[in-house]
Image (cartoon, rainbow, N blue to C red):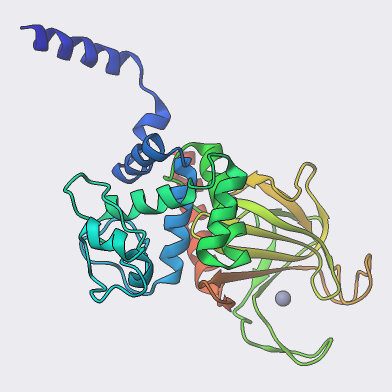
Length: 322
Ligand SMILES: [Zn+2]
């Protein structure tokens, strides 16, 4: 009877408080949050590391929901004769980092909870502050890009308080005239022979340029090829590059978090010379997309994505008109 009462109270409470962020939480986010409560590492950082590692490893792990893989020499210890060791005693003896996070008395390198708990404990072992954690991210990956990317992803999650950040937008809003075709991989002559790493979207001067994603502004400024340009890291650890702008939207600067469809700048023809050079070619947005695989950044063809986002934007407009 007492339980029924509690149940009813909780039920009424849930009805009366439709917390939006709560609804958008998935099991994975709850897993990160449970690790935060055990180790003090903010869940946003664990979510960011998970996302970062999903771009590093080609194969999806069996029976796992997270993508983090701790190499066996670290997990079991360098000189451990059994690299798949899950005994806490021998792992400890050989100086491995593997710990038990799910309470089954073993440190299993293929258990999501064991892996997350082990990494969280490692990250918080210098101290509980963000700078301590960042230092440990550096020590773990020995890769400057890793520290930046993970920090930036964490900041996006922190702002929205959810990992459920899907959705993209075509860079040019509906109602503006533009044209583009697939020019990825074309040869470009200016400044030495280069390959065209993007798609050119031709539009009039001053046409708004929108963010294509939920992301963190990593780059803003001048480059002699790209002119005034912006770079945005998205929640899938893709890097979106916008070149030849004639100006930036107010309040758009490094470190700002943007959402799909948010205006970030305006179409221009800047570039191909010292800062301020403009008009050496017709106005267009150069849009490129890059991925980082843990070792290097590479460009891939954005054209199919642009087509997809353009279609979705059109449908959205139709639906909203009713
Ligand atoms: Zn271009």
